Amino acid sequence: MKDRVSIDLKDGVADVRLIRAEKMNALDPAMFEGLIEAGRTLAEMKGLRAVVLSGEGRAFCAGLDMAAFASMGKDGVPGVRDLVSRTHGLANRPQWAAWLWRELPVPTIAAVHGVAFGGGLQIALGCDLRYARPDSRFSVMEIKWGLVPDVAGTQLMRHLAREDIVRELTYTGRVFTGEEALGYGLVTRVLADPRAAALETAREIAGKSPDAVRAAKRLLNLAVATDARSGLIAESEEQQKLIGSPNQVEAIMANLQKRSANFRDP
Image 1 (cartoon, rainbow, N blue to C red):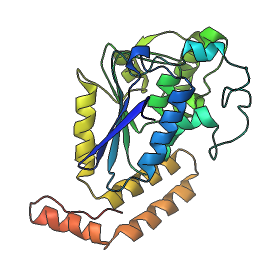
Image 2 (image 1 turned 90 degrees about the vertical axis):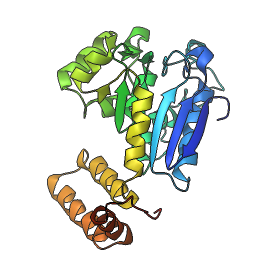
Image 3 (image 1 turned 45 degrees about the vertical axis):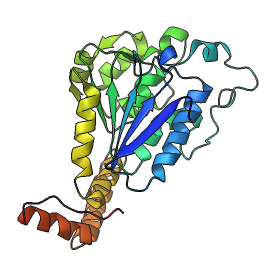
């Protein structure tokens, strides 16, 4: 992980950065492994309340490294020869690099500048929120190489953009801007400095009850994958556990006393 991804935790916010700047943070086997290792580290991190994911240098992530692309199908390239086997729960290794941001118990925000192409876009889509520069560029680029989006992209895009938009972007591979992505629903906000804004939002989230935030993420993850009856039951179950709990009482007292809350970590 040390050569591809860095993590800095401060006041409950993990500032996670792709640090392969000389290659525009392109995805090679080491970057995939670095992302997965970062996910494992974050999942076990004490005091974690929110995560911001960004890229150093000129881009968020330029997609698949062309040297890795040239090696596809050769022996010794992890996760390439057998993509069908599930190595990480419901996902294979490349898919997990994007899906893990959804599975982390705390909110995750991708801050995009420069480009987010192919797998880079799909990793950003795995986060709860996406902040981007208006001039950042995106592409579902796999069709250019005779491939399909397979870093969880089809499952992530379908909950964010209209079906016809997803199909057009996937069939053509055309490049679109942050402003266009906002209109499509693939980006949450466009800002001059998305990383600074993402860190500010993450700090705001970190100041809320971590029990309630985690419960909200569980419910919202479930909402896109279940029927209404199951979702409504889950709401009631989560709420019943929260009412009267120490952090919920602290949230009430802090508001009544007009002070900052002092929440316990889950």
